[in-house]
Image (cartoon, rainbow, N blue to C red; front, side, top):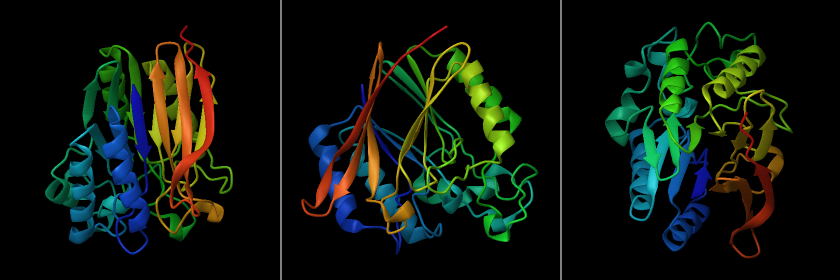
Length: 274
């Protein structure tokens, strides 16, 4: 199974249309089994931004199965900043994208479990840094239970698709969650039998192999397709190949000379199950 993993497209003023067009052409050409988009499809959750995001996903669906989850830029947390119900947070996503906030996609050989991690300002995301209010992610206990329930009944690979990064970025040294929440989350995902976590948010590509007593857990972070790439690195995304024996992750980065995305790094990880 080949999976295209994109994140942080931020349709709006920061988006890079030429690069999005290159991705569109690649999707049509390579016909991935699944296209997974891990949040922040818009910049300011505006209707015209959602329209562009929806058109992009619908075009991808002509050749691939598609799963997408919202990020903190896709929700209107300020309408109910404290412990807002998801129906309020994601009202625009539901209206304009016409997609579930936490979809499940069962493909041949893998089950993809969407998790919405942007909750505005919650008990577990409050920070002393005002600019980080609403930016830090959170996951509610019922969401963890749902992941465990779906993963427990799934065959093949179990893949969580969410926005916030549970491992610190190399340049930013920042987690998408509070550090204690991130550590607990990885442990609980491992206990639930999750094999892969696809995320974004940090705007820098990364692959982390997490040790767990029962099985291996791979956390794969995609870069961004915007002018906001971390450390002025080339924009990037990931292509994963899922095989019974292991997972290959290929990072494709924008080559300004070729005006296309090319392979920048490839790693293979053996699948370990206890």
